[in-house]
Image (cartoon, rainbow, N blue to C red):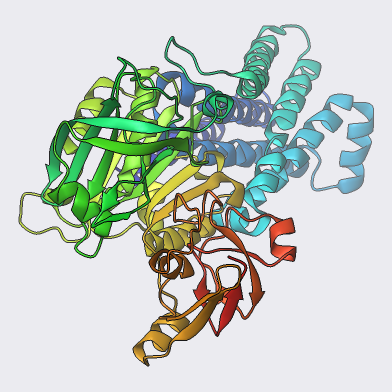
Length: 553
């Protein structure tokens, strides 16, 4: 369904056909002996039909994998409301002659009118809040809670219909069975999400690596694959056994500590392979001209080399038990942890919907392109979108430009209900997080992992002016000056202070240190809790000096 606007227009036109036929019948005297009752009955039936259809969208979408069906839930709900409103209005205007007193008196005599009115009242706030602006104003969680009133309205409509008919109750009973089935499905799906476990012989539990403890040792480089001109994948296997000596979760990272230029360099890279593949793991590394370790891996490491590794760690994980669907947003080489998640979910034949939006510079920069296309052909629940920021040439027919709210809304249905996993440059994560906020995605649904550091305006200006600040490591009794654009951890490495570190992206918390004096700025603080902040604990990999500082290291 490429053009959803056109599809919604077709839906609207077709939904107006019954109303047009009703008006035609009334106008030409084909509505029976009592055209008012005929109109009331017809609009009531249409309201129940559209209300049943809007409740059917979610289970139908999940059973068929047709994610675009979600876009019709609100339009169908509005059509149900407008027909229910017409149902009551015809009764009030033509049967009760606009008399409020007469209407209330009739409702006292006929309880089914009270039940029907309660159903219409339940639908009214749903209609009022069925806009993107209201979702943003209310917040996704409150909006979803409010819209559960649709089931209340449906139940009230069925009871109203059953009480109103005189003898033949087959139709209201049929509606009751449909609504009951949809309500039971919804409750069952809710309970399933609270108890679902990963399946399959190679499934991993969220506790698996933690139960094993942190493994350290050596891995052998079995194979090196050139993915793009600047990116290589390194397949690592056990130096001794047939299987890896550790387990990991999709999205976790390895810590490498090989000697480079006579010094031990510690760097972390996320695992790109699936945890279900127990005989190897892969890391995909982009060669950075100023990256000491990435240059070493590209220029010096050969197949058969042995590399010291610590495995595995990281909280940026998803095993399939956390939600029914997932959205993966990647920028450049940030695809690596998301590829691990994607590979694992497809290895397990996960039934949920997987949405991937991958932003690259040019076609030659698309990492894993052939594999992504192959997975798309094999798994109908996988929906990838690749967008290029520098689409050069006439061969590219896909989206162009950076991630935008329009692209996210078009490619990912049910935005506010699914978790988002973002990985890429720090600037991309900040802008994308803001886009998701604008689309009313709850903050708790947004999970990020960055590579590289974003320079703030303050640090960029200070660095451009040539300013430097003194950093004192109190326990090591060492002091040196630092460019404010550099994290303090880099200076600690140069001075051989001996600060432990792993992820260098503010996630793991290994480089926590107490700030004794001065002030710093940190782009990411995910590894700090409230107790850390009260005690002036900082992350040296993220901390950039705003003035002369002293740290307890």
